[in-house]
Image 1 (cartoon, helix red, strand yellow):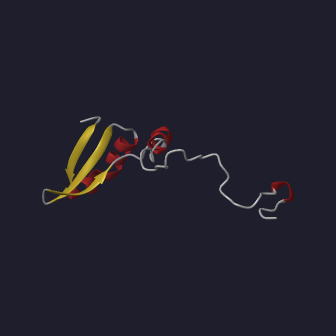
Image 2: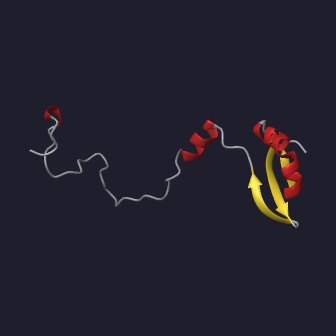
Image 3: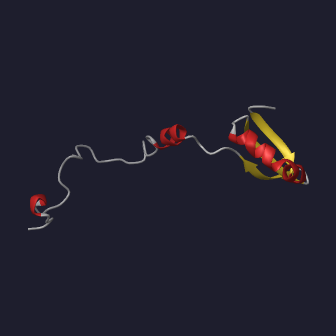
Length: 91
């Protein structure tokens, strides 16, 4: 059953918990569905790898933000001049 979903009863999971966690950590099992009385009650899987996590964040807002035609994203957003050299925002 390597690299597959494993469905297991809660009592069997309790008995084999440490072994199953090692198999999930080694990514030999992609997920475990734990059941009680034949009904799923929990799903266990490995955490995302750092690269997978980064890829899931890249572009996640794409298509959700719109701007009116001609909007200049590089234009200043404050009306007052900035004076960063002196550590002040407003004059």
